Image (tube, rainbow, N blue to C red; front, side, top):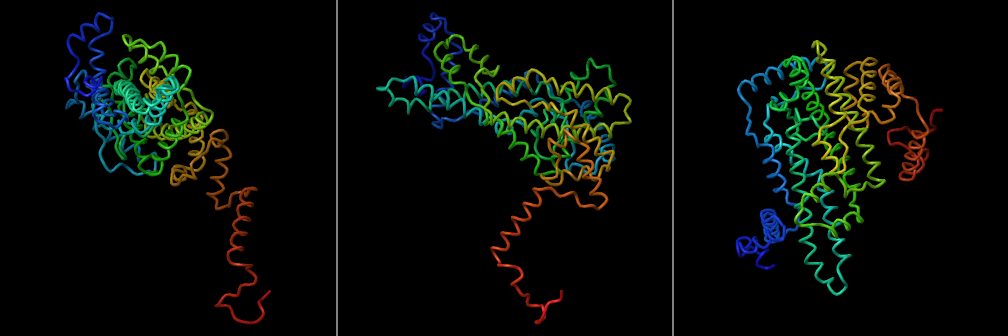
Amino acid sequence: MRQLLGGGGGGLDPAMLERLSGMGIDPAMMQTVMQHLQGAMQSGDGGISWDLAKRQALHIANQDGHGVTTGERSEMDQAFALATLWLSEATTIADLPNPPKPLTRGGWVEATLPVWQELAAPVATSMADAMTAALREQMPEEMQGLVQNAGRLMRTVAGSLFATQLGHVVGNLSKEVVSGGDVGIPVMPDGEAAILPQNFSDFGRDLEIPEDQLALYIAARELAHARLFRHAKWLRLHVISHVAEAARGVRMDDEKLQDLAERFDPSNPAELQSIIAEGGLIVRTEEGQTALTRLENLLATIEGWVDVVTADATSRLPSSVRVAEVVRRRRAVGGPAEQALGALVGLELRPRRMREAAAMWRAVTDAVGVGPRDALWDYPDLIPTSEDIDDPAALVARLEARARGEEPARDEMDDALEALLAGEAENETGPAEDETRDDEPEGPRPV
């Protein structure tokens, strides 16, 4: 084992590979696993191999070697230019500082993988901890001393399996997404918008919608999404923290993990990959489900605004309503890669309440106009809540009262908070009536 994992021999002995083949174990698979383990043991960090995820994702994304042609670049530039003009009429949120650009699938992986890594880290750590705990529980008492040394190896094995699967999912996702913000969360760098021409062609192939109209709609939607996250600089961190909270709310199913360990066949690694890909080892806690509900409402609020703004910006397009419905259905169903991502990290990134949120934003727009509507993104405490999605009329009434210069109706919470603050101020400074300001004249005070 020292020679095998230390890398001293430069790989498995050919005679050993022949014996493995006679045992029914794929020598190529075993050699790949051992290379990963050798690298892990030499690095000594026992962490998640994110480089492995990146290599796997880029391998899948770049399989066909399709780049962005001059014609595709010109078509996308024209669509973005006109969409920028139309979008400026539909929202008060400013344009992007950098021009949008077409991306290859590999370029999308390079640009977005840091975010996927951040989102997947809590689940990867949970899987590694669970495998280490399972090893500790199954080890006899007299061999517990070995667990400390073996624990790092188990964490590395679990991390390598998870990283490989994540790379597989992100690589396949790069073959489905049409634009940078297509998955609904801010995976692109701040202030950047992009369309993947190769996937755009696949998306519109059977829709019987003129390609120029489809390109304009997708460009407008992508720009609206990127503009919103650049304007509300707090929103990116807000979404990422919600996603991370939901991801931390998953744990590994100990019983399934132990059962898998007992019957795992090294000659059939596809079984383990399949179980991981289907989310068979993930269990969501009650706190995780609550966090997921909050995330879904937040994503629906964002997507609903983007939906309304895009619809207004592309109202000149004869096919805009058809394209909008296609996009909504596609987002509601999700592709195989998006479903695999949900199984892998336990996140449902499809905003189930997008139609209700869009109806809320439409009611707000009709009632108070574009400016007051977009101003709701200025601060985190102004954005509509889940209750506002349920009852848009109450939100509209508050905004209309504010537009008339009227103070919103106070509730018991406001009164209690004011009384609490007043009490704290009195404790710090003493009774206000006993104080005399320096600039007040001496003598009796006016009544």
